[in-house]
Length: 238
Image (cartoon, rainbow, N blue to C red):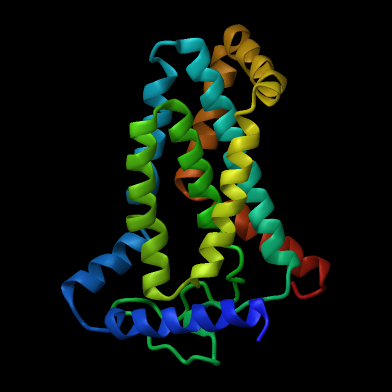
């Protein structure tokens, strides 16, 4: 048995085990499904962290961390989404006929149908956010990690919209991207230009920032939808 076969087998064993609990018609399971689709619950703490530290001393250093961290989140998302559409398609656990899972209580049958499972773009985005949180404050980073593992990524594995390896693959992308973006040479490459823009054209800077943060709050759903349509057009299927 190859390493890939072992990973696939472990993924399926975990999915089947969790599915036995997730399909129980309980209030807790319905609440978990609700949380899994609520972007505000998942993302609001991280937007608060970024906005809070934007004006916390040392202001200049923190702003550079936030700027590079937010750029890193977009880069991690782009890499994750590129791999999703470029790698061989992998069905979500709930849509994988090889294991025939039952739907979690309260989960719609068409949830994420047609979207490849590997790597998890949630994993990439939120791991990059964890990297940003740790760069600003270690205690905050620990809290951000717990929030992500329990209320974001753990929930998605539990209800069967991702395999464990999907999440781990996405997290590897996000953490690596976050680490690179916070390196001093990279900080000096990107942050000064945006800092100069903020100082010279604050209305333009904060207007663009609001739009970016709104897309981030929405988990770049519009961007993902456009990317899917663009792929279909290139393939002549739109």
